[in-house]
Length: 308
Image (tube, rainbow, N blue to C red; front, top):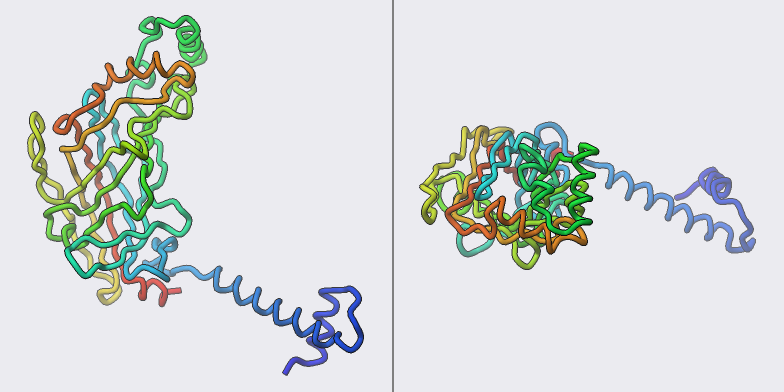
């Protein structure tokens, strides 16, 4: 039963007129609403604790397992250029087991940041991609020269998801057995710089760069040769509820990359071909390599919820 003191508090919190005979019903309704909002906010405030804290964005209501990858290094070789992975990339979400095969359904992170948009520095910056005298269009050449004069030459390369998270392919079985595709990502590579503009990409939602990463041995097209990944050192924690692979390396060197697009903003028709020449785009399979060194963690969704 709700006490008179409770009704009095509600009346003070929500001042205003109410019909005399319906006042207690009105206050009771407001009280119920307040309690429901309080309980809802308390539920939303819950988050995994201890070693399960990294799974805070796991969609535990729909997933059977939670996944979290944090990179510790790596490199992207895009035909003629090399991009070191020196800043941490995270990949997170949940998985749902399927009845057939070893691949699992991937479910994106609750906050939408399934693949972090982490900028990696391109060595040499803008100068590694073009020089202003290569640009024939006068206004574009002047904009290029202004960028160099103002020392706006740093270039960041960001791997973004090119497809919905549901199109990520994942296999915990393949990951630990070190064979087949462990994690396949459809990405587009953004080259970020003041002169290049905000829409300079290699890959798109219609023509993504596909990374079928493996912890096993690759079988690339020539001239690339096979390289070997690793599942790293497995740690079984929390009574088997948490599996942590330390020192893992997911690799792939048989993917292709399309031509650049949107680089230089309104001058993209002039700048795109210059970047294509410098990077070697479109780059066929066998001329590119991705190596992602990481710590990878798997946990049951039930265990994550119980840690809250």
